[in-house]
Length: 87
Image (tube, rainbow, N blue to C red; front, side, top):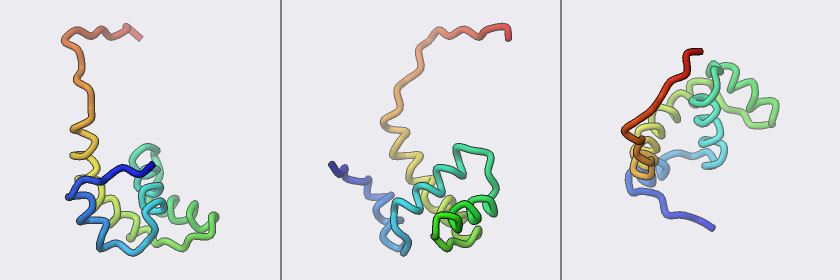
């Protein structure tokens, strides 16, 4: 089940030479967790993938704007009323 990528994301991915799943995994971990780029480099080396920390940073700079617009269109709107707990 493959979904078609937006033209902006596809244009960026066309010039990158690593497998897409490796790039997206590194960028996802970089954004989702408090990991440094050097930690990501070490984590990928443990999995047998040689990636430099500066390469991961370039992936994040190139991929995140396109992914943000692609996911922003699918994002559900937040309701008008919301409450915050005192804790």
